[in-house]
Image 1 (cartoon, one colour):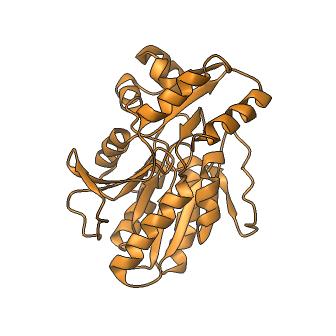
Image 2 (cartoon, rainbow, N blue to C red; image 1 turned 120 degrees about the horizontal axis):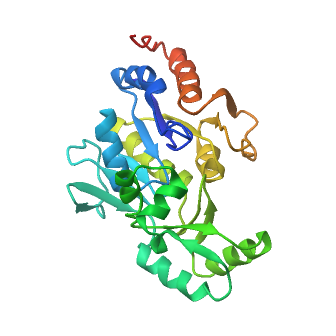
Length: 278
């Protein structure tokens, strides 16, 4: 097995920002899997969204959800599970954050001071409109367990003050692609580092982490990785990755850019992706 573990954001990175398709990247991830390289989804999406996506793509790997809030392992995993991993709905979960109900309690207390709209307040039609998802996918996206996405409707100064207020309760306000996310004291980088250590323990040696993302909520993951890749976005300028002059920025957007970068990294390991059949 190549000594790589690939951690990837989904929306705007492996998945096209507008269509949510990953097909342009399929030959490359198939080559990675054939070589034994794990591809770990590290996303703001929910557990049920990722379960549905992995089934659709034919992928069965551990995954990180809700901006680093929890790591989920499939039931047949051969990785060593931590003692506090709990069995739930056919998976094993290592929680790195607080439950959503605690987050909502603190947000309700701030409603008189700031203007925002939480996902928990939105009906299905509104969520479909705001995300561009189909109704079934929007239902899956609403099933948060460790976070609350917000549509911020106040000023930038108010946003900074709200983030400060939430920090006093050990909560973070994180900007994503379409929403701001309120989460516990976790991030994608911490979750990636934790899971990478699990792989290193399982395979008894150092492994190289590759991280791919496109937005502000990917900065922690990219900063903590050995090989950081910024996938170009059609809607946002690439975020700054402090202290990482080695960051690669793809020339193409979304899954095309993902495939471009991962193909190059795999080729250094002697792994070549087969061209996609017409």
